Amino acid sequence: MRYRFTIIATLIGIAICAFNYTGYDPHNMIFFMLSIPVWISSFFVDIHEVSVLLMYALTILTWGLLGFIADALIARDRRKSGRTA
Image (cartoon, rainbow, N blue to C red):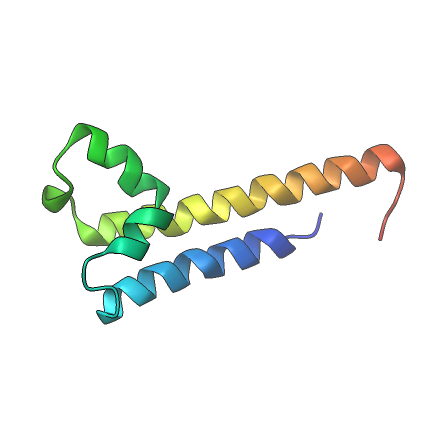
């Protein structure tokens, strides 16, 4: 199985976190829109009390997991159809 989408999605997660960390996202709008762990944690706790580094790590892991799921679905489709390329 190729891990093309896993790598790309993980890089997207890293880019989201790096953009927020650099300060170019002063009101955290991009980070809050694109980070699924932030969505979930905001339902249960005040988002200002959660560790930022934990949210960065969970964001990168979540994006990587989404890419892995996409790669797994593509590999399953290729196995069913008999294609290798």
